[in-house]
Image 1 (cartoon, rainbow, N blue to C red):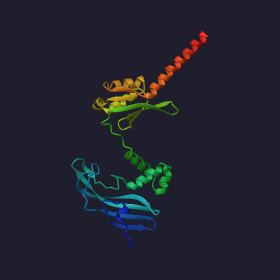
Image 2 (cartoon, one colour; image 1 turned 45 degrees about the vertical axis):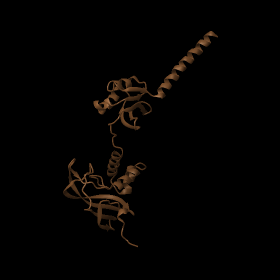
Image 3 (cartoon, rainbow, N blue to C red; image 1 turned 60 degrees about the vertical axis):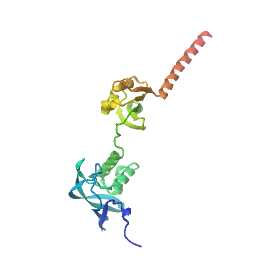
Image 4 (cartoon, rainbow, N blue to C red; image 1 turned 90 degrees about the vertical axis):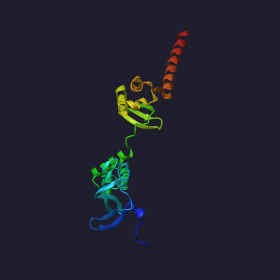
Length: 260
């Protein structure tokens, strides 16, 4: 059986394995990679073909290999992109300017959901600040701010926190149901911040807004989107209807007591 490691298992797309060395004293494995010249240089922003400018090297930390710390040294280029200017070359397994591979970042981020930062840092032999930065960067990339273009139908509601003493205003895109904005408070001023961020042109595209019967929300919608149809959700309509029915019922009981 061959002792060679299949390229696909290593996960170094667009690169060739140049050398592997190790140190028993520090329990480290050092992997050195070189670009596969068969592939074009790509911009890390737009992923389009770019011209190489200057050769550089970077050493990043990779996943543990049988308990051994693993470091990967890669060569790459600063490239000149027609759209983006001077950028770092696209490396499939490393984010631009990152000091760890994507798979290590994903492993760190996943463990951070279940364990304290200090425990994750100890497991991967990382500084806890490094773990914090990796987790933050991964979350920002994974849950980047949603786009506000092509929004035509929105829903607005409030949620309470801190035992009901504080409120957040939440705005949803109802065409492709997902949360697009959150603001502190539940008044007209809070809602106006969303429409300021949305901009006048995009406000004109809003066709309908689903909200409860809060006067603050109604006023907050009418000013920036006077043409939008305001739709009150079923829950609050039924809730208010039941309140009216309760008042009528109480009044009728009182009348019946007086008559008999």
